[in-house]
Image (cartoon, rainbow, N blue to C red; front, side, top):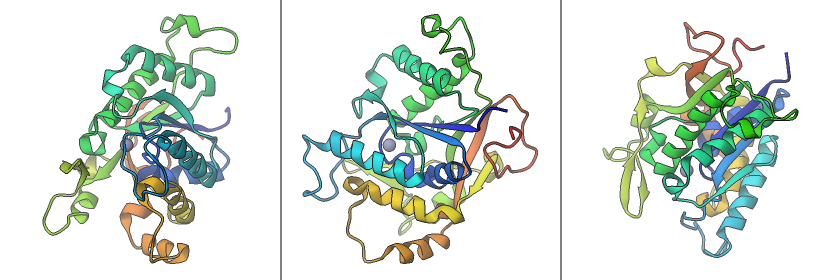
Length: 273
Ligand SMILES: [Zn+2]
């Protein structure tokens, strides 16, 4: 068996942090090769505190923030697809898939994780990243797809498992604020979180032992989450320990060459060890 390798494919710096930062840290700590592919540098987002960046240097600052987070998780430095934030549905879709096929053939992950088609809250960049990742996983093993990639160092590669990162319905309901459905506000417009019934979730990773990395990884994204906090790290970890949104990371298996779980899995590499 070759070394366990996990590849996460997302759209923006910080997409990895809240829902998968614990899992990325856990598998890296267990010795897996963990890669994070991010399509943009997040330059269309708002700046949490004005002295952290300007609009002009935001791509550079957010790249640094993601590098910081990857270091904290103990994974490889991030790989950027170099697309413009907010524009993923408008780029050449086939070329974007081709970039991912090349990366999958190069790094040869057994497991790939990405957004599902709901994009967590319908963000069109997330939806595009999900589609690209899914198509790339399906194509990377086929030698007649992107044949110009292929040489002695770049052979077809069949990913064994593809997972979508999802939010359980129960957790989404738990986020409700004063009866309002929980949402991400974009320019004053609420984009509601999509919750999934627990029956549709195949895989729950407990990350209690990796809360420090997860919280420090989130903190790296200062231009998104801000720096100021009344709590120190230990207090944040204590608080996170009581919150299922922090301690569990949920996935739905959508492609598998090693069968389908009859009960909830607790390991993305189940069936591959
Ligand atoms: Zn995002």
